[in-house]
Length: 620
Ligand SMILES: Nc1ncnc2c1ncn2[C@@H]1O[C@H](COP(=O)(O)OP(=O)(O)O)[C@@H](O)[C@H]1O
Ligand SMILES: [Mg+2]
Figure (tube, rainbow, N blue to C red):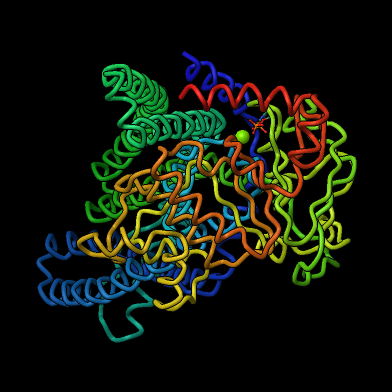
């Protein structure tokens, strides 16, 4: 239900600017700029091959007249010329098709990598607001639509305009001018037609056809609107499938297969409906176009046929003219179709531009320096923050952790503990106050240099679907096998890894699903150990584990905490009791601060939390 409303909203947002956004057009074309000379060469080639094609109608007409006049030698030379022409055009066609594909695919690679690169640097908040499947759909479907435009369609347009221009020129100058040119090469092609009034007549026919070309331009706005809707639904469908496939276990546990099928079907059918609208529009234009062009031809045939009957035109010339009309109608029709396709890509392109225009909001300040190795303290000063503009989640948070200390954040669920942790690697920017490391404001140093010194272990560790070795080495890409093993030993993971059939080369499954929670957590810890961070953040790293795994993980964590500043968000009292400093948070505010004993003596919030917890842990 929620999905359909969000889809409707998206559609509203996407409703068309029916006029062409010139900015998008230029921006789209700018992607082809690096290949301008290849495209130019292709255009020239196209021009040449179009010019050659224009000889066919004149030659065909001449064949017919030669046959009627029983002139065998002319017939032979024309046929030879035709064969030669066909060979040359075949070779040119090969180069053209192959080269267009090469340039097209290169463009696709460029576009994809550009979009992907941009995605990688978008802030975390962007990924919280957008569905994975939708983004993937843009990266694949939308990008692919654009590729065709930038090559085939662009060249096609060029080719058609050239054919049209040359065609009109030849028609006006008389087709025999072309043959006369060919005869300069001693080909002895007959150029005997009576071509008086030939050009102007054809020009009139061409003018009759002109409305055809305008039609597609009239519907272009609608086309673009439909395509955007279509791609939006496709994105929604991809997102829905990605979600249900990725969460197959939940779907099955709740036996919601049919629900998921319905959800997906609905979107697919919705897309189908939009495609139908587009198809109706296109088909109508096609029908009108065909009607008009056939009518134009019929009109000319009536005029031409009469001329043949009264002897002012030969059958060969009539054939030539009819062929030229078909030749000239084709670019008229194609220009329309290509223009429609261009609109379609423009729809896709605008969605891609939206993505590329997402600000990389946490980019470094121009004069940001790398943060030196952290030696001293981490300090929050009167920090306030909220995820959305209107809700402040953290209010006036101040605390300090000295180098080597363990600082515990405690408080009920939803208090804002994870939020505080999120601010340290600068996943989000704060509203007010300062966060400093060794006196450096984290907003003024290079984000990379800050994050490189921070290690995070989450409640639900996420692994990549590769081998255990690669997952651990994610902490430091150039780690040796020895270093990886040491990290695994320190994380209490080496023993269980050794017992696996393929040891470090075992594939862990998507997100690590083939390992138990405790095993996953110890691999995540090994990864953090290998990274050797100066500041360690443990966000309820043991809270989802059973007792046995927890003690193994706890040991591993204590080794990891050694010799660095640790911010630990924990629910077990054992971890908290030994912390150098405990900060009690409730509803985004700090209530109390101190060590275990001092806080117990105060008999305040911590005391209440402690006694309640203690009772709970006793009863378990
Ligand atoms: N991405 C988010 N967007 C909006 N609100 C959020 C987001 N993440 C957390 N919150 C809200 O911030 C508050 C604090 O959450 P959190 O820091 O995760 O609590 P804790 O870790 O202490 O359980 C909660 O009210 C939660 O609903
Ligand atoms: Mg939390």
